[in-house]
Structure formats: C-alpha cells, structure tokens
Length: 345
Figure 1 (cartoon, rainbow, N blue to C red):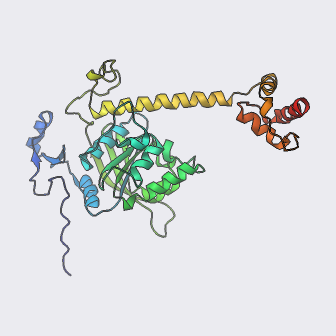
Figure 2 (figure 1 turned 180 degrees about the horizontal axis):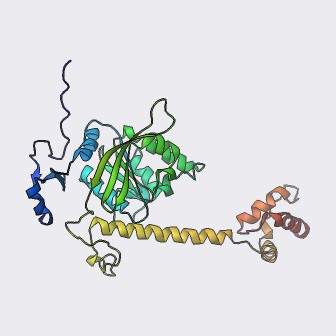
Figure 3 (figure 1 turned 90 degrees about the vertical axis):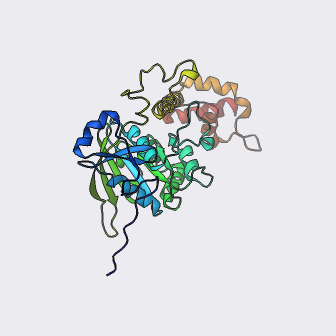
C-alpha cells in the first residue's frame, strides 16, 4: 500500500523543521536547559519540547488549510478567562484579528471580530461579510445571540442557519459560553467540532467533538491541555484591565490600546446597553391602575377603532389601548372595553 504523504504543517511561516524558531521570552529562559524551544506562529510564540507540544494548534491549522470548518466552544465558569483565551487563540489562527474600539459603530458597519450583538454576527457571517476565508470571529456571551431558550424568535432562527452554514464560508468561530447546553441544539450537536473547557486562567482542556451517524449522543475525545498567555501580554502584564486608570480615561488620547482593554471597553458598553434595555422592559411591564387607564381613554378617545357605521370595534379595543401605552392585567381587560363602549359608544 502506498504511504500517504504527511500533510505539511500549515501557514504562518511555521513548519516541523523548526525554521520559525524564536527566542524564548526572558521569563522562560530557564526552560532552555530542559530542551524547550520557542516556535513562532504568525505574530505569536508557542513552546515546544519537553512537556510542551503544538499538536493541538497544528490540528486546527491543518483543518484550515484543508478548507475544513472549525467551530470551537470555550466553556467554563465566570471569571475563568474564557474570552481572553479565545482572543489569544484567534490571534494565533488569524494574525489580522482585530476588535473595534468604542464608541461602537452600527452592527452592519462593524468589521471588528469580537461580537456581542446577533446582528453583528449575522453581518460577519453573511453575504456582505468583510472577512476572508480563514479569519476568526469571537462571539462573546454567545447565549444572548444563539441561546437555547429563544428558538421561537425568527432572528434567532436566521442566525442559527447562518452559523450552521459556516463550513462553506471557511471562517473560524470561537464561541464563548458558560456551558454548551446554553446554545441552540443544532449548534451544539452538529456544528461545534471542538470544545475547550477552562480549568484555570490561561489553561483549558481540549476535546474533539462529533456526532456519529447512528449515535444518540455526542462523542468527545480528549486531545490534551492548551496553555496560552493573555492577549498582548508582551505589552502589558497586568492581571486585569479593570481598575486601570488607562482603561477609559476622560482624555481618549491616553486610552490603553491593547486588545484586552478594547475588549473590556466594548463589554462595558454592551452591559450598559443591556441594563438600559432591562429598565425599559421593566417600565413596560408596570401595570397602570384602572383609574390611570380610564383617564388615558378620555384623552385619546378621538381615534378609538370604529366600523364605517360609527360603531366601536369591541374586539380591537384592547389592542388599541396597548398601542397607546396602556398596560393592564388581563383580568381587567373586559372592564376597560366595557368602559370604552359605555363612555365613547
């Protein structure tokens, strides 16, 4: 049997012969005595040698070179560094990876590759996407966009279909989520082919995932542990951007421009927006008293829905009240309608 040629190590000037060797970082020089070497992958440096291997990254890159899909779910509890880990992994796989700083543009004009909004994800994975094959997208807080609890939403279905068709586009998706159970079933069962579960900050266990043709549950194979530094750790080695005076100073010219800082500003902006939306929703849920609704009826009586003969449309009254900002309990609805007919009929 003819022996198959070994698939060459992928792009980014790296190959197994070590032509892309780099200097070990100063704080890791002590590892030279143990035979550990540094290897450059794009703009990043990884370690190989005793106790270290690049085989997981190599597998990802081989898939990219073979035009195969890569959809990675990074899971773990709050504060385990999922997003930082995902951003650093994206920088290895896509050296052109970037995040748009605040104030953020419209979702359909945002070329940044970390997303918080489902419209932004649809734009980056849709027909007008500015991204090329092999580039990475990191949807943060993915359960807000492709969560398992909002399948009935039409936008949700359209987004899920976009992501399910990601194979043909050749984009790398790195989904950040607390647990895969929080994702839509089609995404978690048939689209995700790798899962990285964070065990510590900067360290995750990698699993290959697939759904067998005649199986009833997902199969997983443990590939090993992947350890990555924080994004832009060569520029700033602070453990957290939160509390840093340069994160969001009044003078924007003094802003920290590391990817970590840009991400934190975008996330704060997103959380502020979600907070305002929650306040608006709570206001809409507040019920008016009967007296308030009746007072409002007297102010808007001129446009009450009527038939051509002038008779009030009884079945349209409740909708008319809600369209005019009235909020009431269902048990009070009939009383409201009766009052309209009695007063304005």
